[in-house]
Length: 128
Image (cartoon, rainbow, N blue to C red; front, side, top):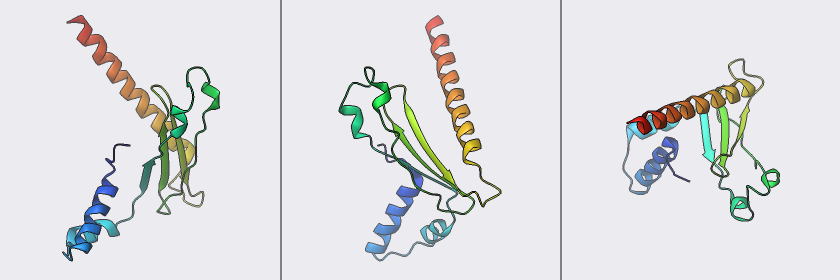
C-alpha cells in the first residue's frame, strides 16, 4: 500500500488542522466537494499464504465499497502478484452518468496502454 491517494492526504491534513485548531479555508472547501471517484487498495494477505503460480485459481478478488457520490464510482483494487490485479467497481444504476461495466473497460484499456508504452520503451532502450 503506497498511500498516494490525494483524498487521504487532504483528509489527514484536515484532521491535523482541526487537532491544532488551525482553520484552513482551502481544506474546508476541498473536502466539501463531491468525490466522484473513491478508490482504495485492499491489502491482500492471501498472496503470502500460498504459491500463486501453482494455485492461481485459489485467490479471492475480495470485496469493495459503494460510490460516495450519486454520479460517482467506488473502486477497490487488489494487487495480487506481479501479473494479477483485481478491481471491484461499483456505481449507482439510478445515475445516467455512470456505468460500472464501461468504467471497467476503460480501466483495462488504460492499463493496456500503459503496458504498451512500457514495452515500447523497453524495446527502444535495448536497441541502444
